[in-house]
Length: 212
Image (cartoon, rainbow, N blue to C red; front, side, top):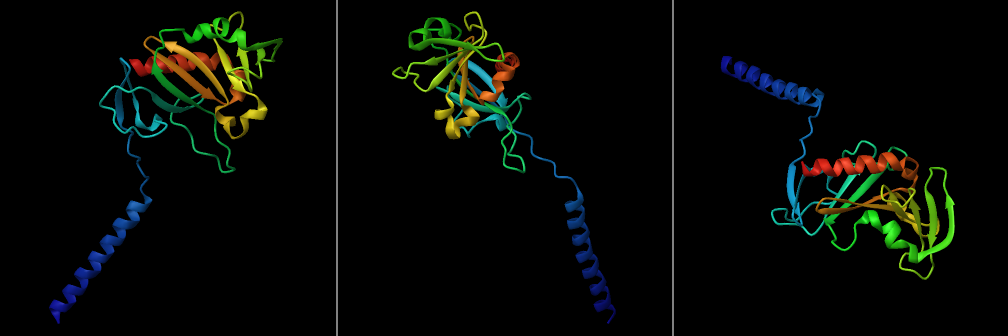
């Protein structure tokens, strides 16, 4: 009888202990696992970043990559944020990073490449950017060019027209720039053109940090 009583007490304490552990675990805040730090080489340029900035997982990052795709929030330039409760997507920028093209620096394209494909009509938007449409029979049909005067070396972006934007509204514009041995195509929503100076400055600085 005495042994049965002690066995009963032992079992009660055991079950109670498990219950207390479960309740304590439930009440404690969840500590997320920190993202992995990844080192890759794109062309000949070494880059490092946190894994939660990847647009999609890398199959193999031990060998030099032909390209790299990252996605960052704006203006924070951290991990992209999930959709809000009403389904809206916070602003983000997709960075497509490739080895630098030796033919033409992206900063020269607005003045040296695009003019032959543009219509003659120009206008200036409310953010101080000069806007021109591409010819309908050109390589860039259905796009508009936004250029920071005088020649777009600091900033220029190609954006899809509203008719072509459709479901690509979150990546309807592309700003291209060079950073030493890599070229970057930064795709972003057209609404960010209102803050183009900050966009250009922050993205260039962010890419410099990837190389440090």
